[in-house]
Image (cartoon, rainbow, N blue to C red; front, side, top):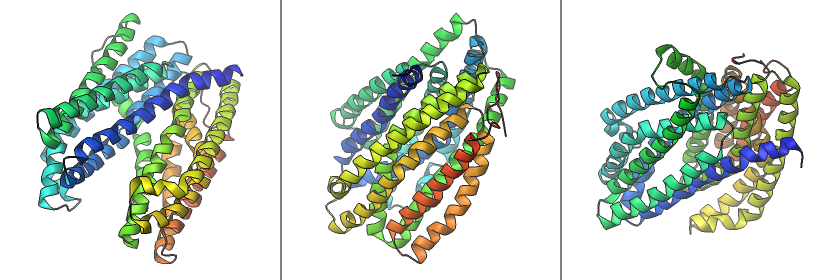
Length: 438
C-alpha cells in the first residue's frame, strides 16, 4: 500500500468510526424514549430536529478549525496552530451561550413552528429546555475535535465519542427508568455526557497548548478572525440544509406515504453520508497540512488519491444499498404502501452514491484549502438549479422517486460538476500559513 494511502486511512478510519458511533447511539436514545410512549417519541423528534439543525449549522466550528490548524501545522508553526484552535474554542463558547439564552427564551416558539398538539408540545419543550443547556459543551466538542483533527489526531475524538455515548446510554436508562424522570431524564443524561466529553477534549487540547507555550485566555481579535473564516462555511451548510428541506417539503405535498418513505430514505442517506464523510475529514486535515507546507505537487497527488478512495467507497455503499433496497423498508415500517414507494427511491440513491463519494471528498479538500467562499457561492448556484427540478418532480411527475432523481442529478450532480471544475484549476491551492481564497 502506498504511503499516501496509509496516511489517508490513518485519519479516515478513526473518523469513520467516530462519525458512525454518533447516529448509532442516537438510535439507542430514541429507543429508550420510544418505550415511554408515542407522545414522548414525537416530542423527542421535534426537539431533536431543532438541536440537529444547531449542530449542522455550527459544524463549521470543526471544519474551519481543522483546516486552519492543519495549515499552520504544515507550515511548522505548531504554536500558531494551537493559538488558532484556542480562538475557535472561545468562538464556540460565545455562540453556545448566545444559542442557549435565545433558545430558552424562544423554546415555545421553536416548538410551535412544527404545529404539534399540546401533549407533544409539552414533551418537546421539556426536552429542548434541558437539551439547550448542552449547547456550550456540544459546540466546544466540535471546536476541540477540529483542533485534534488539524493536528492529524482522529483517534482521540473517536475514543471520546464512543465513551461519551456509552455513558449517555447508561445515564438515560438510569434517569428515565430508574429515577422515573421521563423524557427530561433523557435530555439531562445527554447534557451530562456532552459536558463530560467536552471536558475531556478540552483537557487534551489544554495540555497540548501548554506544551507549546500557548495560553488559553481569549483574544477578541482572534475570535473575530475565527468568526470571519467561519461565515462562508456557515453559508455553505445553509445551502445543503435547504436542499434537504426541499426534499421534505416536496414529499409532504405528495402525501403521507411519500413523506414517510422520504424520511426513511433521508435517514439511510444521512447514515451512509457519515461513512463517506470520513474521507472528507482526512481531506480537510491533509490538504491544510500540505498547503501549509507549500507543497502544491503533494496536495495535487493526495487529492487525486483521495478522489479514488471516495469514488471506491461510493461504489461499495451504492452496491450495498441497492442489494438492501427491497428489504430495508421492513426495518422501519409495516406499511406495504410505504415499503413499495421506498424501493425505487433507494435504488436511485444507490446510483448516486459514487457521485456523493466524489463530492464529499472535494468538499473536504476545498474546506482544507480555505476555499469556503467558492463553496458558498456554488452551493447557492446549485440550490437555485435544484429548486425548479424539485418542483417539476412534484407538480408534474407527482412522484417521490422523480424527486430523488432530481436530487441525484441536479443537486448532487451539480455539486460534482462545480467542484470538479474547481479542482482542475490551481486557484484554490493557496500556500502558506493562511489560506483564504476566492
